[in-house]
Every structure is written in structure tokens, then in C-alpha cells.
Amino acid sequence: VQLQASGGGSVQTGDSLRLSCAASGRTFSSYKLGWFRQAPGKERELVAAISGNGGRTYYSESVKGRFTISRDNAKNTVYLQMNSLKPEDTAVYYCAADSIYSTNYDYTSTGSYYYWGQGTQVTVSS
Image (cartoon, rainbow, N blue to C red; front, side, top):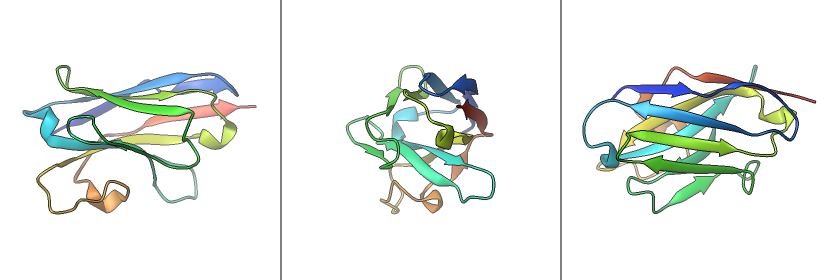
């Protein structure tokens, strides 16, 4: 599967952005999906993840209550709605996917995802 992320940009503190990640390939619902981010000099970290049918979601503590992950399996797209953005949210955001049939049941680590998009920059200024 190929992933194409979009929707990043430069915003002010408190603003909102919605990231999208469109996937090619078949059986989109057979993939768990995640949004990760990487700030300069830091490791890539989980932002949010969602199961194949959308029934389970996971969030990092730093974004819980501000960000929402969702997916539209008919459109082969996963979204990350980001509200109340803060300067510390500044990073390159990546979408990632892995088969739900994988024996790796973890949703939160980078090693749990085989497919990665190219990243989209989000910059939040104070």
C-alpha cells in the first residue's frame, strides 16, 4: 500500500488543522493506521492510531482531548483533526499502515508499521 499525507501548514497557537492520508491498494479496512510525528532532534513518536474498522483508537497523552483520528474506508483515507494546536506540536507528521493480520498487535510503536507516507510539516507559532 502507498500512503500520501497532506494538510500540513503553518498556523498560530490555538488554531486547527486537519491532516489527511490517502492510501492506494486494496482492502483498506485490513490495515491498522497510525499518525506519528518527529520534531527536529527527537525520535519519531506516536500521535494517534486506529484499528481497521475504526472501533479502537489510541492517543498519546500529549494530544488526548485535542486531536481526533478517524478513517473513511470507502475513501481509503485516514484523518487527523488537530485542535488547540501548541508550539510543541510542531513536527513532521507521518501516516503509517500495517496489516491487521500481522502478529504484531501493538499500535503504538514505529516498528509495528510496515508502510509509511512521506510526511507533512506542521508548524505552530506562538
